Length: 405
Image (cartoon, rainbow, N blue to C red; front, side):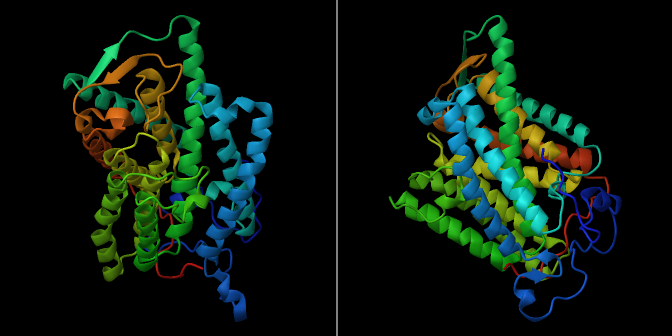
């Protein structure tokens, strides 16, 4: 996914080393700094290296610098990018820009932290196998959802839209596009953000972050501009109060479990506090899509949590990347449904929602149907059945050793 950044002699252990230590009683120290920092040095550096808050701040600033830089170059090569049409070529450049921005920011931050870019949950054993299984899981899960909608009469199939060589051509190009989508969104949320938060966050920092997210949604649902649009590639639009409830529900679902983990002082609870934040944020960034409803936004947050669980049980984000790419490819190209409210050009099959939008998904597509929540639950159960009996890798140090910078 990205070139390796050479580490120093005191570098952080790679994910392979972490996986080799699976089942260890004590969590590994991920810090490249063995000695306790002195003086004002502690403001920036803790026992695990650069404090998470500073790392996140640097990453956000770099990302926001790289996006317009690479965006300008992309526009020079493809001026039609300004039209924002959901065509394969436009979608390719729309995803390539944040991918390059993410990699640029990630490489800089990794060097500052004396890590490799692959240390952010991109290493581990059997990565190709995890990716392939993720691809298969994503396609099967979306197919099961589409089949359920069709059986219930909430999705109607129309004539095939493509013929001849166009089937292969569009299928291949959309596969590349959605591989980029999987790499970008999983790279940001399940790789860098999950890793960085998990090594330092506690319940109170998580609660504060999620409270800010919900406050932003509340302001935008009332016609305001919000306060977090600078974190993502495109400005977040004004949304309906109904749509915001998808994020509110995700936030509420994680509240009690994460509070109990904090009160019990459970080892490794920082990973799940981070999962609460990243899953809520994943639902949050989907509120900027046209045609989304509260079910679709809730589903985005829920599938984000499933992807975090996949990182926990497989030791890397490759299952999530494959599943994410295949889900979107099947939804957008193969079945020709709306994807998060967006209808693509150059799809194989043609389908139309029918009946009550709560069941059909309406303009949101299958992700907006309440049936998607059952499919996501089955995906989670499947992950735990396949991987749950295996020894889990020690991925991060426990919460509470650092306070976010």
